[in-house]
Image 1 (cartoon, rainbow, N blue to C red):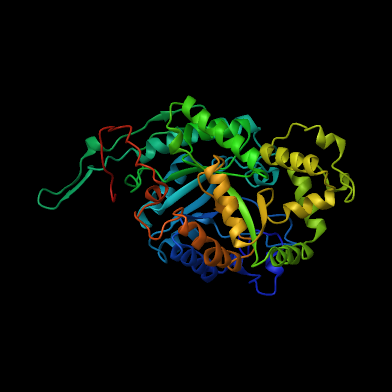
Image 2 (tube, one colour; image 1 turned 45 degrees about the vertical axis):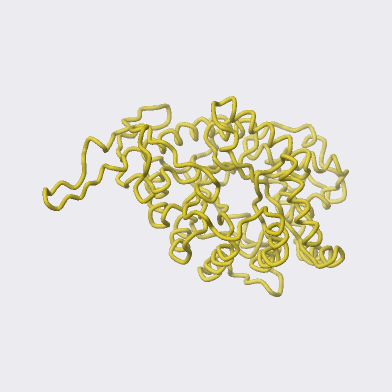
Length: 436
């Protein structure tokens, strides 16, 4: 998230307020994370402006374009882009993702979202967004078709025999000929099978529909939880759903987000968090809160609790899991609206932790060893400073306990996550893929 995950990060004296469109900023972040041997760099995205642009950077570079550039400035770190299944077509997106996997040498990942916002629908000629269940039904068919397109070339399809003049074996290039509820696509794809077979498949929705979708398809799940107990419940639930779907639960990697404010002492960490909080614009927080609950900012009173009609959990077509998280947080800690938007300023509902490097590491270890996480999405409140602090002060503790790598062992994102190359559905006995 450009200058950092905190909504006011761009206002810090040490921040680059134009980080959003500064390619050098992104290259340096990717190289910094790679130098620390992170698994991957993950870009959030949505096909609409963020807010109105009045109080924080409202736009961002298209993520697959940006990751293509970053792939040429790095060599090992995974590159994950958020792309909507609701506002794309399977053939074009499967082609673009396969292309990024090829040009990066097998480091691409796709964070599959169904796009909850009404403003996004308006950008694609829709008066109303598709309802929640319909978006997930479309995503399910979209992904089945994308996999068929990636599988449409067997690894041995290209022979490139100059002597005979035979470039490819047509018997090893397959037409999915898909005719479904949402899509009709002949195929085959005009890009060879990606080096990883499929780009790493990531999912970030925690609604009931989202969890069912993840159990069927996701290989990594980014998720938001405020407490260890909620994270552990989600972890157990998603593993059980994966098992019920006939999958190996160990092949579904659960990665909660954590927003760490790190100081050499607790007092220093609290002062850092306070610095961010004092730069927030309450009006922006109110607008964002209203957007989650699909209402108007005027329904909220800053120094009062959430209105009763919101506490009653109205049916929403947007981000259902995030609205539930906010309500649970507000009720559990008896927060006013002013306090809620302060708590959401850093991570929009992800777990914020304020403490010393040892306390941050202990929390990560507790969640990991206690069955609440397989790893973490590190969401630094400011970039690059927050990432630098985590690398310098927290990673050595984790490495000292044997919980984080010293060096990369593999070259692909799947290898970093310990996941296999998926079998080709048109040639199940295939044991290797192009470029693998």
